[in-house]
Length: 293
Image 1 (cartoon, helix red, strand yellow):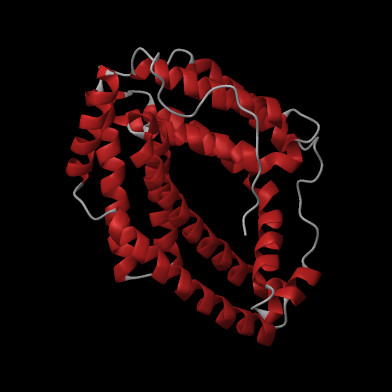
Image 2 (cartoon, helix red, strand yellow):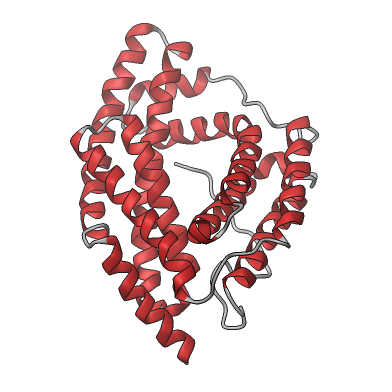
């Protein structure tokens, strides 16, 4: 249901053998992602590529969380990235809503009616002030990223952030299982996405194992993302539909969400089955073997 795009990038979003340490990896990847975002924001088709801009900021925030316990500037820089992305979020909302409606129209009859009534989304003007503000803010963060420094070397730098994010994903999944509200499932998604980014960043330590793991986490994230998009539709429906039609759409959406929840919990119970320390220890052994090679 969510828009996707393919982009050409020059540097990989993962560890490289010639990264001398975690600081080198942090600076390299953050500078690449943020330079890309600033460039696209100022391009003629910037408004049509909001998804890519937000994705670049999310990838950078995922990177920061991996080194957060060893990076003193984490709180400040993470907040700066979050605020920059928030400034362009509204440019994407209408497009996501339309895409979600199209996706469920075959099984939710009122979705087609709402799609017809949904007004054109904002953000279609590439000269929108929000894009320029975003570009300026991201460029400033990129310039600071060239000086970012983490404390320590080797796996000891990466293990704490990996462990913490994995534990948070487990805790939020357990909370969602106890009380599967839209808010709880959305909160779980944010931490599951962080684990996805960490898996991608560490993929070279054993690609055959890590890439399969990443694919499953990605599937989970997409399920929870679609669940959230449907929740947003439910909130917006009364604005675009008569009361009876909005209620009918809500009932149809809940049936879809229940299926999504069941599959998300099935995947999550396996992905987050082991203690965080055990996963970090296992991946740490792979990391050391990869370094030795």
